[in-house]
Image 1 (spheres, rainbow, N blue to C red):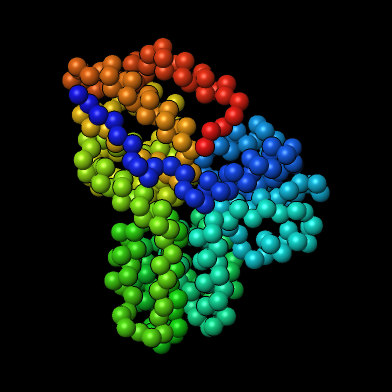
Image 2 (cartoon, rainbow, N blue to C red; image 1 turned 90 degrees about the vertical axis):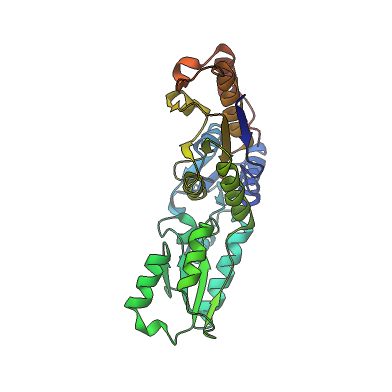
Length: 319
């Protein structure tokens, strides 16, 4: 009998849940809302907010005079706050508290004369926000190899005051490798543990589930950093697939598997995880006696089609 198991920590984290609820609360008041960038890296949620009247803007200059601007969970640099203040629009700051903590750390250490070294993806909005609190006194490195190269290239690092932080969704295994590169027992070096506890738990749970599964389904946005890292973690232990929602299952041909695990990124709402679980369970039951590949395009039954139709016509979004 095949089993479909969902990781206990899959889905919305505290910071994302908080940010999403802030936007929906304003929309329920019929407020004119503009989010500075997509509120989270999940297109289903973003599209639902747009259908309720929210706008997604890329710069403060795009704000209409009567709009409330929402700072997304990834956070922004100091200059953006200054631009909003100058514009005069009301602001709701939905920056994740764990990200705000990093902002405070790097701002404080920069004032104390430290060079800030940041582990993460330089193109990710969270990292861009962190950079905006460092007064240009920083370096970003993506992994232990880049960090090692930084030390080799910059002999003057030794003897300088260095402060290390990591993106809240940074890969824990890679961070541990980075720590091995940083000189030990140097009083001028301080290391802050800034990877979110939810990230740690989610990655650990995903790894344990992947170890006991034949295949893993990782659900989350294509541009979601923490979802991509979950995919990387699971891929170490079994065949893994990254999808955004249950609709994408129809294009997959999954190998015959006795144990199927499901996990999801921090920007994936509960209803999408449930849809994937339901779809996988229904189709697994349909093919329980088959030794062939599971062709979901052919195996979709009427109940699944009805489920998808209900989702498309859903009036309220459950998170």
